[in-house]
Length: 102
Image (cartoon, rainbow, N blue to C red; front, top):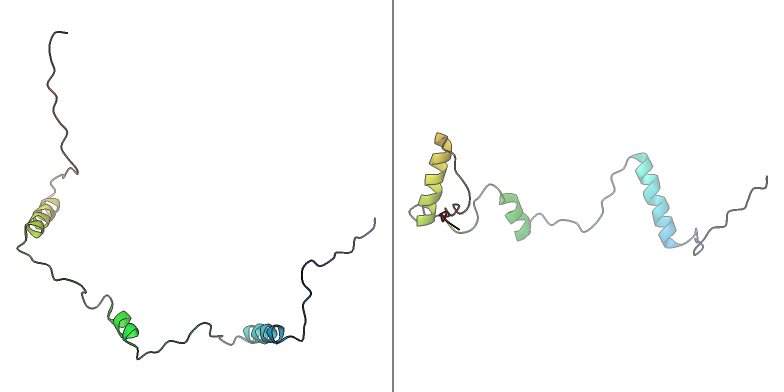
C-alpha cells in the first residue's frame, strides 16, 4: 500500500513574518500560564464605566406613579394572585346564544 503525500493547500506560511512571531510568542505565554489581555483596555474613570457600576443598584428611568390607573390595576392583580384566586388571561370568551329550530 502506497502512502500518499499530503499536499498543504493555501498560501505558504512565512515563519519569520511579524505575525507568525507574534502568534508564536502568544502560544508560548499561554503554555506558561501567563494571562494575555485582548481587546481595548478599559478606562475605569469613564462615565460609561461609572454608569455600568451603578447598574442594578440604582433604579433608572422614570419614577412609578403609585396612584395611576395602571399601577392600581397591577396592585389589585398582585393581591388576587397572592390570595390564591385564579386569574384568567386575555379577553373573556363570548357566549353564543343557541337558536332553536333550523
